[in-house]
Image (cartoon, rainbow, N blue to C red):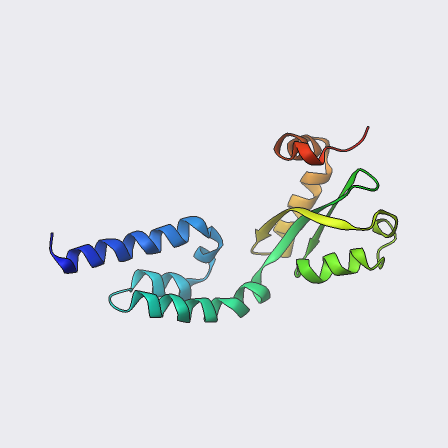
Length: 145
């Protein structure tokens, strides 16, 4: 195997690995073009990509998050475009329901392209089937009955 073919294989497998680890990157056509066109300087391209997507992810992602309160033994499910800010608001007591359960910890989050998708997932997680899914996948954070 020649050195060039080895580099090409490692680049394509590296870009596939990156897309498999971070599937949300597929929603940005710019990122896909950068990863698919990695002919030389793959490391430099990744650095530029990281700088470029930093703002895109914050601006374009909507989240459904699940918080846990040890004090109450309860979960709180909600949507947000900025999880860090929202968690700070919950822990500052700016929400009526979560005020009494401080401190809240982030136990789960999911990214979506639109706020509609995030709200649909929120509604599912608040349903009986969604609560059961959370209980099965996060047994440490099982609600008190």
